[in-house]
Image 1: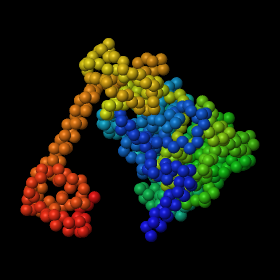
Image 2 (image 1 turned 30 degrees about the vertical axis):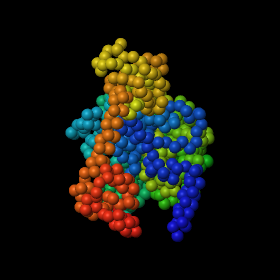
Image 3 (image 1 turned 180 degrees about the horizontal axis):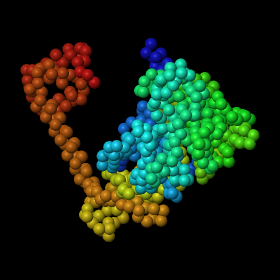
Image 4 (image 1 turned 45 degrees about the vertical axis):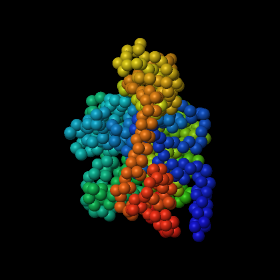
Length: 595
């Protein structure tokens, strides 16, 4: 029976491995959320599995914010990876919970932008003022310092994590969810129920002034939505259980100054006048204004709608809102062209995952600025794919095993959006981190994008001047963390970060390295102490133990213990020890000790 069970389990495991491309990663042998680990810093970014690779993807950096039930501790926080998944920058201490990491331009300079639940200083103190909300939109400069924080206007209003759009006019557009009471007769909930109203505000970044505000309940009938009160979206019976009827998840702005809104629960994209707030047109949903010429309206429960110019819209079509769905359904990215004169919509391109996965929430579509390739982040499913503009798959990657999202999309690991940019330059105001372990010294510099190599330097004193340090070795930068051997290195060391011209960008702190002979002496000392301790235990201790314990220690089945006992000098055994006859009888008895 035991053999049959083992064979059955082996067959099941083999089937899983075959089904998931023979990958131990995909059957979970590396965990639900495989991570990288480092010696110099306590960061645990995702360990990507690249399932398809093309050299045309080998550029730029990936911007990701992993989260979910299996992402915690050192694994949390916004992260920048290179095209092959090597860590460039991460912060899991200052920003406790973040979403939507991106690079955006403000007044000619690039900033890292994201939504954050809490911002702390590097000393662990809360930098949020007493009267300011605990959530905010954050802009970091090239040194990774907070340059701007953006807050919504209005008592009790909190900025929502779905969006932060910076415009060429130097403004920020943010979505807001506002719990309030309203008439819900059309939903059968009576004249007074609680809802989550969908708002957006446009705010001047420099002054913080409110420039424009729009509210869904002023323009949208609840009869036009596809959602109804439920446990996930609220029943509307109380403020705590407010019904999310609209679900705004994207706001963008056209060149003419009008706003583009994604209303997930309407299955629609709205164009709102930038002056009156009136709805100018609607794509999709119950009040669609366009004639579909080529599957352009085949979307629902969508995310990340972006105005691409030339009357073209990109969006992420989730195509589902629950894990219970038809196996034939899948999510996709879409590029849709609108003919405003004839009011027609045409699907230009669609972007489907090679495995046709479906993510029930979140997701992103980016037209990469430098290449015009398309990057699709699959939101609630921890995967992303880069395509040519016309839809050919170039590269695909994931940051959790397939069984955690392909069969059923539980969202155990996810990233709300994924972006790619090749223009970000990070110049941190810190120094490189180094750590000696054994006979190696490890070095990294979190966020520094211009480091091309490292130089190991040594000196006889800790306070030596630059001319007192001698070069030991230079190495090219190898991933996030590079290591040097310190064999033959005495006294004190530091490591210099080198740029592409071999110039010194910064140097680490000076630390002491123990000579090799000192390390050997220390190891030998520990070994000697261990041997002396064992001798004490088996030479002195048994004399003071009860007879049953002494008998247990001398059990022949415990080979190691018996061996040590036999090392004692031969002399008559104390009366408390067993006779040879007792030893022979004990061999037939059940074992009394535990492995």
